[in-house]
Image 1 (tube, rainbow, N blue to C red):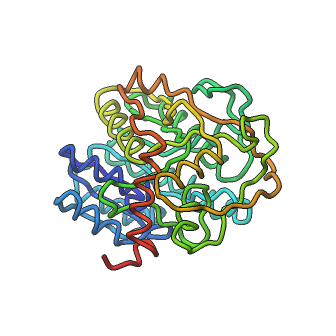
Image 2 (image 1 turned 45 degrees about the vertical axis):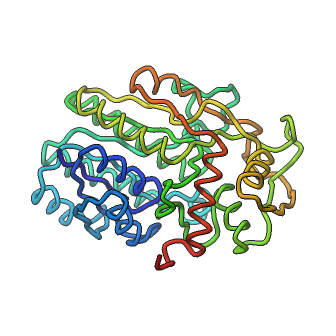
Length: 339
């Protein structure tokens, strides 16, 4: 069975490719390498000992996409391709709508053209906006606070309309919380372009001396240590969630959203202290003002994914810290390293 993975060279995409290959799927991977590096593809092949087809194309290039579907019998699509930085989306909203929304429309048009109607989609917990009730379940009110989140919510609504028009589609919308960690080999991990956008990569880059200190945005929240609490999930658990979702869409019709999280939250200071203990190093930090729109606490109710997909997160915060540190210390400059 052949799976098309869009954005397969990225952080979540590359780890998911490993899981898919190790479970017997054949892959065709496409990526335009804007937020990712070709070296990640080489390392996925090395980790798994399996070859697959890689296409360096833009999802907006409909003719190139049609060629891929024409050349290969695609059974399903796992769709990661898109821009993902919240701050950048505020500055460049048109880039986000073009890539994330129009790109998905082009993909679905070609899938429909070739009668491929099995789809696993990378969505985000940002579709819940500033949710006030914890844990967050899939039937919580949806609302977004930035263009990135709006593109994810728009894509979800577009896909619901597609299913309503044709009940032969089978679609899983995976709402991620906060991915953390790396493959146990240390060969693939998160390698952001420029300044990291999330806490965990910031911590690892401070750990190797690429950045001076972690900034904590507020320590006056109504939490046990005053810092914000989030649901962090190991990247391998997240990748396995895609595998379970794919197995489900291949054997059913419908459209469903699933939270992928651990169901518990860790504070910013907890993450820093756990990382220090796990890595055996000190992480300097500085408390600065709150960011607009940040909430005190956010964590998932992942019970639907357990009930319907047979999936649940297995790895703890220590494992997330250990694997992230192994990746970063062996790859000081990410995939630019030649080892």
